[in-house]
Amino acid sequence: MPDKMDRSEIETNTKLLRTSSESFWVRIRHLLSEKGINPESALIAFSYEEDYQFDYGIIVSTERGVFQYGFDFLLKDVSEGLFTEWNELTRNYQKSPHVKKIEIALHMAGENKGSAG
Image 1: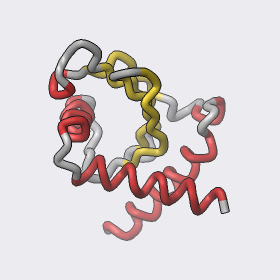
Image 2 (image 1 turned 120 degrees about the vertical axis):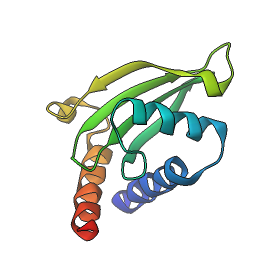
Image 3 (image 1 turned 45 degrees about the horizontal axis):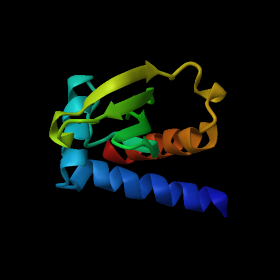
Image 4 (image 1 turned 180 degrees about the horizontal axis):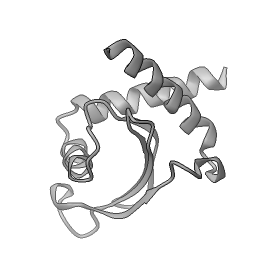
């Protein structure tokens, strides 16, 4: 059952990333594009509002890259928020406390890549 819940959470957050018109998601899409990540095909394995106006998340790209970000918009409009943290976890994501969700997202990325061709 937890796998279904995790998958559903990934699907919900990924849909928000790809389609939401909320300023938060518009800005995340822009920043991901600047990092060379296509927000139209990336998945959000994990997203958590860690503190007031700070979001912690993990992105999985279609190339199966895994990236952790910290999005900070403290004392500024969300449209001016920045990634104050950006770490590639592709080779060591197994050490993350979110490994299960990352592995589900990696599997989903493989499914999406296979169906896109």
